[in-house]
Structure formats: C-alpha cells, structure tokens
Image (cartoon, rainbow, N blue to C red):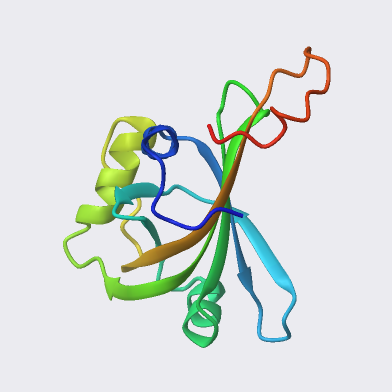
Length: 147
C-alpha cells in the first residue's frame, strides 16, 4: 500500500462527495462499519462528523485506528481506501463542519439539531485505489492503478 502524500489525481477523486464506508474497532476488537459523509481536507487529512451519542465516538477515543473506502457513485470499480488514525476530536459548536458536509452531499445545511455534533479529523497514513473497467480483460499492469 502506498504511503502518503497522496497523488494529485487521488486527492481530486477524494474531493468529490463519494459514497464512503468507515470502519472502526469495537472494544472487543471486532470491526464496525457504517456509511458516512466525509470531507477531504488536503494535507492527507479527512474530516467526519457525527452525533455525540454515537458509540463509535467512544470506540475512536479508545482506539483511533480508522479505515475508509470511498466509492465513485457512478462506478463501483473506481474506489480509494484510506487507512489512518484520529488526530483530533472536537465539538462542532457552531455546526460549521456538519453544515459544510451536508452542503457537499445534499446542497443544504444539516436539518437535525437534537444532539451536539462531534468532528473527527483523521490523518491518513496509507491508501490504495482501483480504477477499472469491468468490461476489459484482466491486465496485470492495470489491476492496482491509483484513481
């Protein structure tokens, strides 16, 4: 797996509002995955945001290792996986982060206000990507190209 810094082509892919699944570790070591909005911050950093009642926040405080798979919504065969560690967690007091994520994904501010929001910044250490046409024959030189 390549280490960071991220190539420009991959960073451009991550700038888009892709489908994304995040994996964290439960206290017993088993993985927990969930679909999530993310924002590529550049400088090999990712931002996510969630209600303060989510159990995965406590799990991230206990073990900050995180993995993501970001998938192009128009092609399952174009995806980037990221592995990293929590760098910072803070309350999104003025809801700037969740509103920016909501604008990116749905074009309007986030409507739910019942719970405080927590932002999590993750430093990406490793990544790998796929960009394949499923109709092409297998080509060993093209099987692990970065996006």
